[in-house]
Image 1 (tube, rainbow, N blue to C red):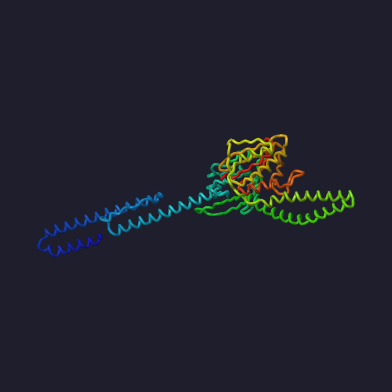
Image 2 (image 1 turned 180 degrees about the vertical axis):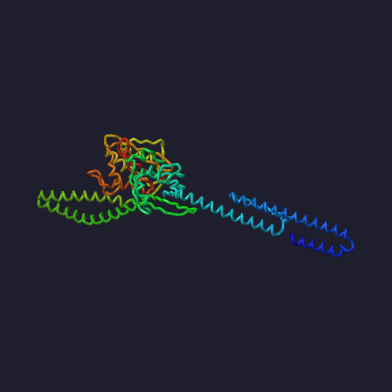
Length: 441
């Protein structure tokens, strides 16, 4: 536009020179001065307009440099040229697009942060200087730290979990760690250092090498698989129990029938010795049938039918059958679960506690923490050796001479069916305590 105006002014100057100059030099000089002044005014106006546009664009770019995408440049269509208005409009369109992309990116990052922090997979990202630059809540709970950012990864592992150091060279493996098994809150230093408070847990360890901003980083993931392995193990035991029950029942039925016929025949022949033999066989068959029946409970355990009930009332009713002291700050605590299965769980635990120490009343504590109902059953017996604790929930395994080894297996099946956790540990002051954590909702 400025060039066109200058061409017009120059054309007027040439016309004035050809028409006015020969006749009136003074008029030509005056016309020349006026044309020159007009050209200077137009140039200064155009220069000031361009300067304002450049300042506006510079202000907008500085806002972008500071990460502010909320700015929008205003254009004076009356005083600006078409090209200048088009530049400002294009700048505003780019700003709007960047703003939308930033909002979308922020929402994705927020969603990813929530997913990672809600996951029970321990996630730790370490840079090339061995400095932790990201750790989710599961990692902070795992290492019992309020914040892990800026800490040395090797130093933290050496201090909090020395046995994990032997797995530092593994990239994809299943490892065993001795840890306090709690599904709520943080554990104290005494619980971390006390072997009696720990149980063997299975974890899937995976490491990934990646580059961020041109530097090497290591992503370490620890996924808890203890409960999954317990469920698979229990399903295997159930299949074995069903097969054994089927085969034994097929053999017991005809043997029992033959013993009954033998007893009748021995009675007719008046043979006391023969009668004694058949009576002994019948007694052992009945014991074997009871054995099969007890193990069938584990294979027949159904999916929990949840409904709300008062767990305090259930325990108070069980006090008529088992002697224990109930510690609970609330008069009523509602739990959503299968009442008959939870009652069977409590009966098994109370029965074990009473058998461990018949002379001293056991203790049962109930509390609610972070959405979990916590039930602790403690006896005052001799406790359980550390090497036996990991095997306590295995079917057929029992430390009692007359035990079936099925009680704690049923307890763990009930707890797993309610998406809870159960753990055994020796109390620091003596005796064994069983901790059960069940979701309240």
